[in-house]
Structures are given as structure tokens and as C-alpha cells.
Length: 149
Image 1 (cartoon, rainbow, N blue to C red):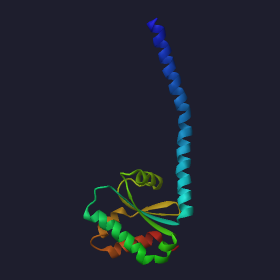
Image 2 (cartoon, rainbow, N blue to C red):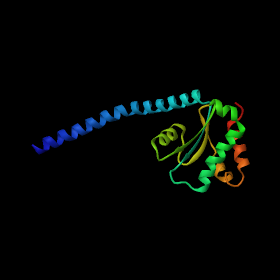
Image 3 (cartoon, one colour):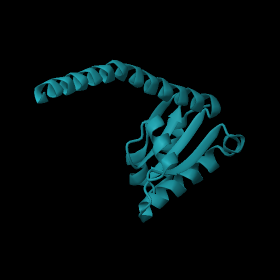
Image 4 (cartoon, helix red, strand yellow):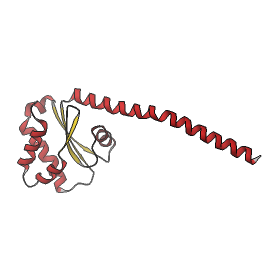
């Protein structure tokens, strides 16, 4: 009796596994489509989005990257910032919204990204290099990444 139950349980677990494997491509396709949809919405809603992703605990340099990036955008593109054609967002990676947006733009941890035409330009290394010592260079790097709109 035990062997019949054991065989039936094994058969059942194999069957469940096969069904799960059959639906896996559908879930992956849906996730890929969802990511593409959010990128398309972001592109349509905001031609250029600048994101600074950070963690709750921040050092002086982390705060300066955010402050200098935001200041540079306000100085370079005041009208586009006011109209919403260029946006800046500082998002905490330890909060749901930060995780969601980071996933949709391909951020892998603390970073400064310019998202334009559906592409992400990673300025993280340059931002941390220049924010406290030569903010003018960070401003130039942002301007290069954004280009002419």
C-alpha cells in the first residue's frame, strides 16, 4: 500500500512540475512585456528622466551627488525642468517605489542614471568622482548624456 501511495505522490509531483514548467515561459514573457511597457510609458511621459538611486543610510558624498546633479539640471535646463520634459527623482532603494523604478530602468544599486529614448546612461562613477571635488565636471557629464532635446 505504501509503495502505491509513494508512486502516486511521485507521479503527482512530476505532473505538477511539468505543468509549472509549461507556464514559466508565459510568466517570463509577461514580465518582459511589462518592463517594455513601463519603459515606453516613461519615454512618452518624460523625454529625459534623471534618477539618483540611494539607500537609507547616506554619506556626505552620496548627498552631494544628489544635490549637485539636481543643481546642474536646474542651471542647465530650467525651462525643461519646469515643463517636465526633464525630470529628476531621488529614490530610496530600500522602499517599494525605489525598487520598482530601479528594476524598470536597470539600476543595480546606488547610481545616477539618465534615461533618454528608452536607454539608460550610467553616470555613477563620474558622479561620485566629481560631486564633491569638481561639480562643474559632473554638470558637463550630465549635459553630454542629455544632449540636445
